[in-house]
Length: 184
Image 1: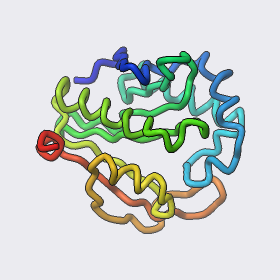
Image 2: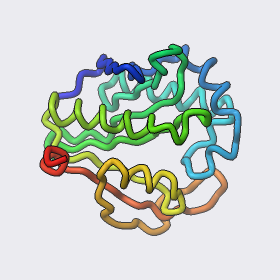
Image 3: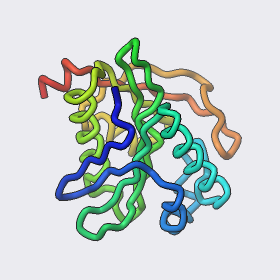
Image 4: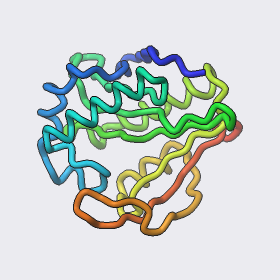
């Protein structure tokens, strides 16, 4: 069972539950519309960002997902978000996604660090046996990042998701199983 008030902290980051008042700081980080080409929502639009955060807060209160705000431990600045969702208690399965990292932190290893923290939490403190991920097949940086943390490419769902620019994306699925993670 997930702890919906969970805070995970290391010397690099703090993962804490997202809050509505994160909006003002997040809107400064999400202004570049180019950042959202491979994302399912254009968070450079303030109303879209506000709704995206609001939905995350509601899902957390309903225990449907565990959305985190990612905070730089040293500066205490918000640097992104990630979410555990698509919870299936019966199947011991979750999805990690809805992740974005501020431009200045991209390529610094923060995303891999965060993913590994979530793996540690899910595989050691919950009954999770499978973690799923999905991305736009065209999102090469996301694909490389997923493969870097040991995810297995599973397959493509063609014309799966409508993107913000009215393009239909082919969605590439990845996963990691608890027994695979334990071998790392």
